[in-house]
Length: 601
Image 1 (tube, rainbow, N blue to C red):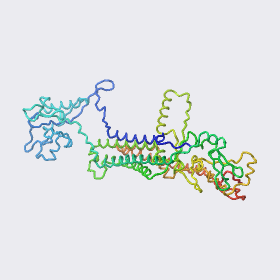
Image 2: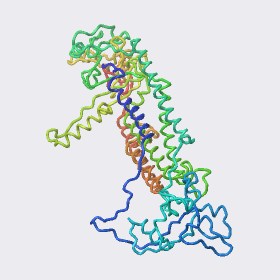
Image 3: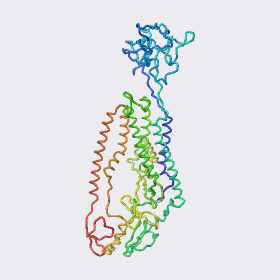
Image 4: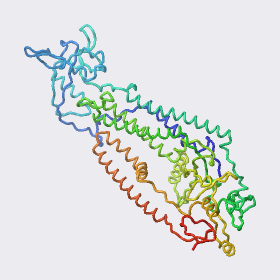
């Protein structure tokens, strides 16, 4: 039996790597940024020819000045009206009218530059019709045509809003005014003191902090066990193991089974009871040999802290999914108390900022799902305390996976290196070991055992190892005839305790377990993560239809698998009543209760 490796062993790398990757992702998310590229309109087509012009009507930008005397033409309005800050003549310039000042570019007041606060528009030019409009030169063309319509005599007297500003008086230098060709408004940024982000940081960094505390607590507990000898396995030397497997003499004597005590020996050895029948610790089947170099065995015990951390991880995943749905609802303006015709209230009414927050949180959720999926077979044991197998509530058996490569001698260069890369990734993730965690049970006489690959492994306090039992019934006819008297009830009970029932139990999940198995599969998770993006970015109808299809497929697969497994269970778990010779009398017993050495008819 291979002893459990210490915390520096390879087995702990996977979960440690996942934790390190989580911290690295958080740092990347906090410091990373993104911007759109390739936003310029092409001037030439694929053949190298100038892109054709189009005919269009375009609105002219306003001419903004500090003094209306600097407008290209004198300002005139009908009698009783005056030019307001929206560039139109009105009977009265109300606050609502003046709030539409085009010289503010429609920006929020806090984003408008100080130089633009006192700008007022000249009379609005209106729109112009351009017969030959080249989109790659649209801004300059529209400005030239609008300047002609506004009767601007010198275009150099008017600059561009934001690049330069008008002069305040005739004695200063600068332009007379500026065209309100507004750049994009500076994006609103999170202060990360918003309630949404406080909740997110509390959940995430709370988990990270508790994860660090759990790691330290686990190491201290295991160090305490190691100092007390609770993590040092007593392993049989290889030479002795080979000797007893080959029928050597290193077995020790014990009272016969008839006396009600187990005849125990080190794996592979045998002793004889009064009838000359041997009990064997271990079998000749290499698949049941826990001393193999391809098998590692460790013990684990539950801890309330670790159990809470496991539930915290599940709650974190559920809360993160809720966050994504909240951001999606906010994108559509569906959150409670959202003003009419408004969206993205959680991102200062900026859909771009809301989209960035959604993508960041979606990427974290993908990372979380992929990480948990990659280490799901080891994850629960990470939140347990490692100990000796005999001291644990669970025994983790890891068996090396040997791959079979078809046509290995015909691999080309590409296939060879792809396989090498795949092997490295599997090794890093621990996927080259088959991990099975088995609960430890007690027999009627309080002997510890666990069941692995349909075989019961019983712990012996003499050699401090788990191993299966077998019984030597003899290989010659006279040996079998000598056992024609059958077994006593005491012997049958003892043997049933050592090897378990004569029955292969087919484990199948409940309906809820079958549903969880389907929704936790890689295919469903991949489709769900993609559908979340569909539902967010204005494709919620498509996303809902696809989600309905996916759920229908999941339900169909779940029902078919569950019914097939139940049918297989009924076929495999067959038992019958028969007569067995016990205590010198024929008694009716179930085939499940038969043990090696029973005489039946």
